[in-house]
Amino acid sequence: MTARDDVWFLDRFSKSWENLALCAALAERGLRARIVDWDNLAVSGGIAGAVRDGRPVTAPRLAVVKSRVITRRSTGDLALIYDELEALEEAGTRISNPSAAIRRCRNKLRQAAILARAGLPVPETRSVSSQDEIQACMKDWGEVVLKPIWGHASLDVVRMRPGGRGIEEGTVLGIREEIASWHLLEHHKTLCAQPFVPNPARDLRVVVIGSTIAAADYHISTSPDGAVRHFLYPLKVERAPITPALEEIVLGAVAALGLDAAVIDLVESSSGPVIIEVNEGLTVWRTVEGTGHDRTPHGFTALIADQLADLAASTAASSTSAPKRTGSDTGSPNAAPTPSTS
Ligand SMILES: Nc1ncnc2c1ncn2[C@@H]1O[C@H](COP(=O)(O)OP(=O)(O)O)[C@@H](O)[C@H]1O
Ligand SMILES: [Mg+2]
Image (cartoon, rainbow, N blue to C red; front, side, top):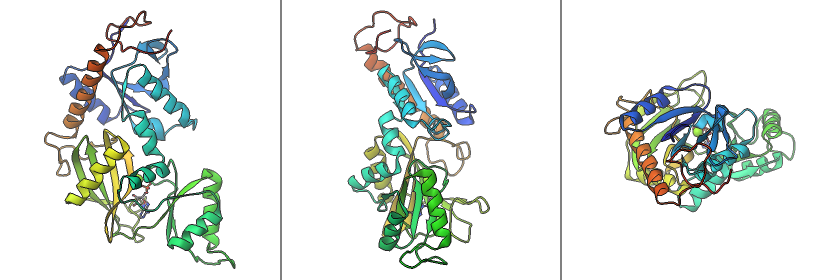
């Protein structure tokens, strides 16, 4: 019989510096936190809410979903991951970011539509499932960027121009563009297409925790083609100014998507910053903590721990006012009420 944990960090592979730092910071705040390997966690058919390492346990007050849970799935079954997160919510756990927010953010087409409807600057974004549709984009926009809908880490992000070498009559795809686009479509089936937004060969990367801008840096390309993420030409990082326009855009994006924390990639167009992507959640900050890039009052870890402590406290408050459970497969007195029966 174990007491209910306050916070779980759901992750894969390694414990990570960030998860360990947060567990320690939460312990200092009197909260019990643990790192849980996603592959050893399942939804319980019983009232406890979860099976961890093969044993039924009460779902925690708060669970932080690290990005590897979503991006490094090897079975490919995204729907099951979302089901499991929602089941934890049904068992009384506050998920951060909330599962609905993760979902609306992770699909690049859906994300761009939500941001555009909120009046925020995003490139026009189309779904393309055929080479004809890619050619239509090129005819409308000229240079395009193609990327997987659920992509990350710039994998399979391809920039191409119409009118490449060896073009066939009646098409705008050159020989290499035709081959590459065929393979991308064959593998991903549907892609996101955007006009390439001309920019000074740098991304603007802003970290938002709650309503605080925790970092704002330029990621400057050192590559001759201006690509920011390039294996042979590592990017350079410099502090960027936070203008009122930038602040309004990034805080607006986090609010529109309903996120607790996010890392936002923008490029500087001739008419101001344009959001390329909102990455939900926070991954690595060991390189930033305590350096000149850390704009938080007491460090990233402390600010995130404070936010998580508040979220866990609000779950605790809401579950004490709810009706008491009858019967439990863990017997935890602190367990949240759940609509399921064992
Ligand atoms: N429409 C665009 N215009 C200009 N640059 C872009 C555009 N889309 C992507 N990029 C560049 O490619 C990088 C990766 O694209 P992104 O959409 O963030 O994909 P991923 O999810 O794989 O990181 C961006 O950080 C930016 O430098
Ligand atoms: Mg990105």
